[in-house]
Image (cartoon, rainbow, N blue to C red):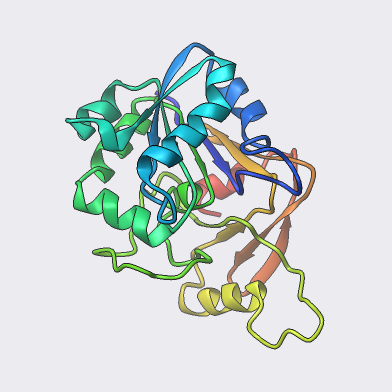
Length: 237
């Protein structure tokens, strides 16, 4: 069946309400009523129960039932039986470590390959790529490896910004991604700004939103145009 992915940069954009940038695209992707399996493992600063409740508060008025994966006795079966998998943001390293420890990566891959919609934001989008080597957050825990779900043949960098505050002397995001290109020149990085999302249906991909993204590949930075067909990157361009 056709792969259905919605990879969002962020849960908020500017002063928006929580999940406001995600909900319109989610509603296009997934009809209500539906049972959504929420993966809260990127949450470190709040309990999994609280994180799930926060997401449920935002989504249930739209007809979605949100079920926390951490409450399921058989997590692998839960991945097979939901209507969609939703993976929240937070710490990418913690998220990946938990999925590895519970042996859930094959279950999620199989569910997505069978046509189950996958929706993520921030860390939840990071792990859809080949690895988490281009995430922005700190490695507060050590996963078994940096290899991720590999639902797409490239790296992601959500929350992308090329703004440099006056007087800032640390490495910019562009410098960090340039370092990655040096060690992995054949692996593209799709950098998406706040409030934008990659929508993937099988072999077709579009960047949804009001701002362009960027692609870092083979030593070059190029524009990733919004609301245009960018499917070539699914072919490992």
